[in-house]
Amino acid sequence: MRRLRTSQELRDLVSETTINLNKLVMPVFVDETLKNPQEIRSMPGIYSYDPDSVDDYAEKLRNMGIRNVLVFGVPSAKDPMGTEAYNPEGVSQKAIRKFAEKGLVVMADLCMCEYTDHGHCGVLKEKTVHNDETIKLYGKIAVSQARAGAHVIAPSGMMDGQVKAIREALDSDGFSDTPIMAYSAKYASQMYGPFRDAAKSTPSFGDRKTYQMNPSNAREAIREMELDIIEGADIIMVKPALFYLDVLKEARNRFNLPISAYGVSGEYSMIKNAVDSGLLGEDAISEYIMSVFRAGADIFITYFAEYLAQKGQHRVRV
Ligand SMILES: [Zn+2]
Image (cartoon, rainbow, N blue to C red):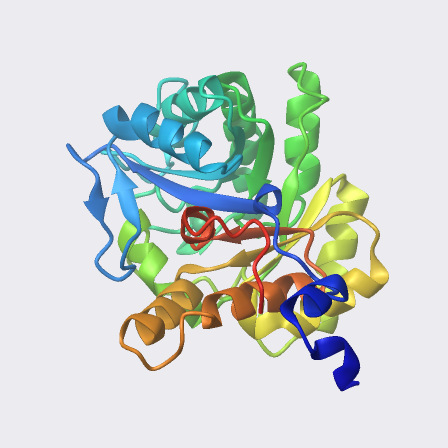
């Protein structure tokens, strides 16, 4: 086996997995309450952007060779119904428009937790999220995002029937060409901690375990993905990535749709802190990213996208 490992060139020649910038998506937080970009305390090197800085940031990403962004909006006003989520002039709609104008592929995260004052992903009825009332609003949000210029709608709320409701809403508003990237197998994970800092979306009571998946279940993830495919998903997703590589691999074996993986904030912060403090060598970052592609992802949403672009590592060696 060692014959093909004797030089970097030979190792590259027989390498089974390469990292390509075109396959990476940079998540972006745009926060209406900010006046300047602000580093997220728990995510070293990652910023939340004020609405006015979006143009410059979009340009920076383009110049780095990053093509794809996943946009999250944080509004200045929140209410129980999350009405800012479908305001045509809301924080995400405006940001979507700007990123699209700069020529980036804009994926719009679709959820309500950043927009509701209680921090849950939908409309409440007696302290629990009401599924069918919520997905009606998801349809409305999807249309507002598509009108703003989003190229891909990415529902992350884990409500039953959300993909179908969004597909129907998009189709009836003339957006039958707009694809849906469904957060299909999204687990109720501790790995989202740093994100909630940035999105200011920690639930004011309870947790999300009544809609997000139980980390102990892999077969259930396959059912979630099957349902989303039946409902019309164009891309399915596993989230988080790192602790769920088995789910990703199983999805790859079963489905022929494009599969995305979301390397969430906790994965980023864990690895970034370990590398910054010298506990791990820097190559841990590319080894991590490689593991996700090796497990079968076609698309990787990662906070390391900028890092990889900066290093000029269109093809990273492990
Ligand atoms: Zn949510």
